[in-house]
Length: 371
Image 1 (spheres, one colour):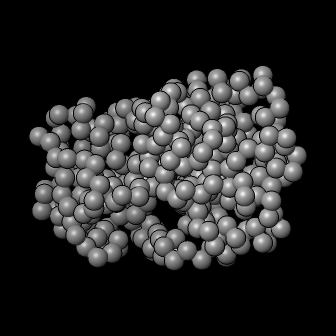
Image 2: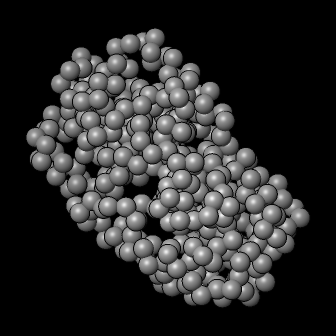
């Protein structure tokens, strides 16, 4: 079988969630499947993280924009390669293509009410493109994959997709997320002392950055330890707006923002953190939740969407809309050693249920069923 995989953005240096998912799926398929032939379609970039092999061909397609790349360059290249099944991995797919499609629809957040304060041009254009594209391709897809039972039920109920056309395949996490001794003190590239809170906040409203920072302010007012907060990749102007609106000037000198954190350095960040704050309002899966648990750090996460499903029944669950509740849990972890150690162990064991190998095995089985 000749299988095409859309992986447009995996060569870009600063990768994000969906990029890592398809990258790991490709790497696992490349190792385990020597019978089928794969064409992996990517946009040129500086991080050549996958190389061609005997039955896996990496094809670079240069095109000036995401929509043109997907709607014009991708279907032309796939047809030229003789692709029999095209897997589009990032929520959207070409509309005018007669090649059988499999779509990974990570979420349908683009159909849900939006925060009017989101001024990110990149996120707004992406939202508009998905709203235009997805309704037009759903009926053309042989299978629609999503990444949690929560999201599958959400898609079925809101888009009226027949259950038999859906497939749920959990994500995994990279094997280097594990307890490690930081002999080179890599974490010091980002923050001077260990024992900090770690938060992967950004300007996307669903990441709940504002309430989490308000919670951190409340924590600082009540804590005798007053741990630093390490935040990745947040715009300073956005932070200033949050501080001014909420009158939480006390957090400014306690926040460390080093910018983008290289993925290979993240295990050392998790391992040297006191706790990881994963307080999103909504996630379809939540790979960082697994990464933190696999490193043995307690993870404070939300009682909404997929997070209880992935974190498990003994996860540290809070109401993400309550800054009081988030702050209270930060203080409990700090003051209750038995609770802290129990949650470290519970999360570590839970993470063992997930792996990229399991993800790829289920994905390959799905390809072959469609053949």
